[in-house]
Image 1: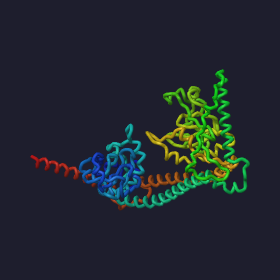
Image 2: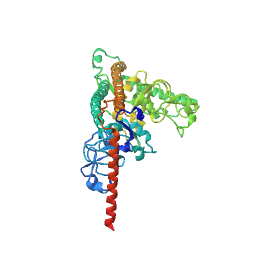
Image 3: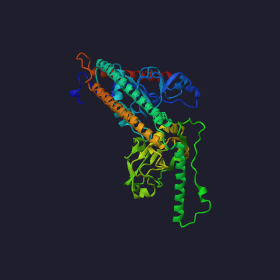
Image 4: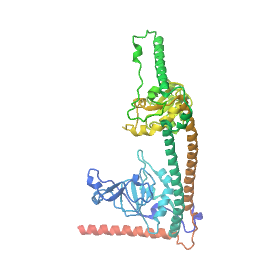
Length: 504
């Protein structure tokens, strides 16, 4: 915006011209526990959750401030993140200290701190774009000082803040209600899944329907089919190698893990506990080539599923970001459509069912039903019900992960086949309605975010409140701040000179 079309009384300047000084922070030595046993809130980026927080997670002592680079910051001072959470700003309502990732902005008189608090929030993307650094992004002080600022008169700043807080308060209330509704939907989905896999969802259906085969009978048949399939596969291998099957070769059959029912709840009549390895076949994906991102492996006709694809899928997975070439397929494995994918690293226990033949790496496990009478949809719904438990219990080293052995032991309730299909149908109907409600909430949240940006844009371009011709121009304000800055610098020089003369 040029000076010619600036609102009356506004001035095009920079953030640095509105400041008297910038105060940095630091971290007291962790080797001195007493430093972190004081009462002074010590703010870091993790404490920047609200615009006006009244406390921090950690507290330090006065000695910690005296012996480190941090400083005591007066209450209601504007603080901005210049590293990590670039451009985030707060105004703590208490006197505090800050770490090295934050800077306290000492404003010139006549600058409304809440005006700049909201302005920095509206300028956060610009600040982030100015950030630099390989591992941690940060913005240099000269770049922060140089941020272009359209400054209104002091009185108009106050009017803008009042209008902003009125509009944003209403908007924030609406957003909070939407997020609360979204949370309730999530809880509703989990309660539906719990009711489904415990038998409560289909209790009425069971009273009117008596399947001819129980879950226990189904499991026995699956286990028989499972062993017969393994034996047929072994015999085919012997024939291919022109070998006579050795004595007792059937004894090498890998029996699937049986469920530990010690702490498991009682199931409805006709249901039985099993393990994933009993009702189906589990195996890890494969991607042998190193490095895995070698260009010749990609760009072909074979979809390559990664953990992110599974996380973003909605039951069925048909869209992936990458694909394998013939070379990629040669060092991997092609899984058939209908395979359930389970993530075991990064995103623990997330699931999706392949809509097409595809490959995936060893961070994903594939599950195939042991019989056509085991609904893959039912198993996938069950996995959603235990996903959070798997993630919570996953061991963590560099990142959380689980292995094939853990999945093989997962206990799953097995209803009769007809009831599995009834459960899937009932969940599809209820989950579909919840999904539509969630989409409506997402749309409303996006609209609220866009409305917030429009409000902020109007505020900082002079379109939110009317100008008053009686307001003193912001140029007068800037001149006063400049004089204040010069006076403070002169005072510091005089103090330094007197201290030097006193030491002679």
